[in-house]
Amino acid sequence: MDIVTFRQDPAILKKVARLMKTAGHPARLMIVDLLLEKGKMPVKDIQAIINISQSNASQHLKALEDLGVLASERDGKKIFYAIHNEQIGQLIRCVHDCATC
Image (tube, rainbow, N blue to C red; front, side, top):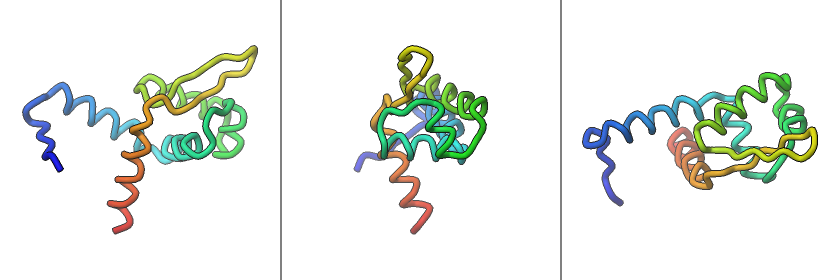
């Protein structure tokens, strides 16, 4: 396994720190987990399953989309979200494994 050295690339360090901070929110982790399991879903279904308000869900979804983790697609009045960066699944599994060891 290659050793990652963030000190050599400050831009990557900032990007990784932003990813960890943004994706580390409990509601966002639940959203990513849900979309990894179910695939593309509308906001209304996501917020109902996660049990948060639609405006709160939209804020979290927007943050994840801005980060490049999710992609959105409009179909009439509905907006569907799906995982855009499949590597987020690897990150979630790795962090899960670290937290449960």
